Length: 134
Image 1 (cartoon, one colour):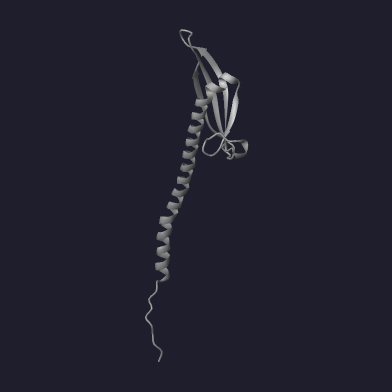
Image 2 (cartoon, rainbow, N blue to C red):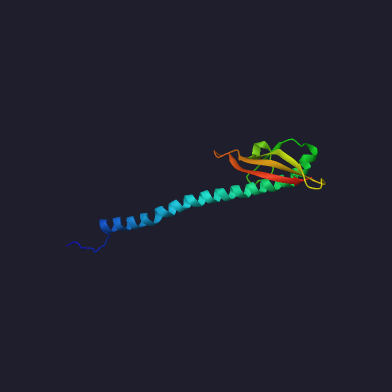
């Protein structure tokens, strides 16, 4: 006479119920993951934008003494000036207006700074006005 084993298993209803609970928990988490990655990219862009803006403010006086016309520079993924072959971002500085301050001892000059991404569809990262007192 063969021996009967008493194996217990899950029924199809129990397995379907467990999969439903798992899907109910995992799908929203996957949605949060995509939002988190998007926010990470935006924060990286803001950091690079700030780095490029800092570079522009630091170099504006040197550039205006040598060549008062517009100029551009390319940057890597960290916002550091880089050759065109490694460039991910570009920045273009264009002179706007100059006005004498009261008393005539100084001139206030503004520059338009346009920062673009060279690798993504959304090309424009930001537009800024940089002020300089001469």
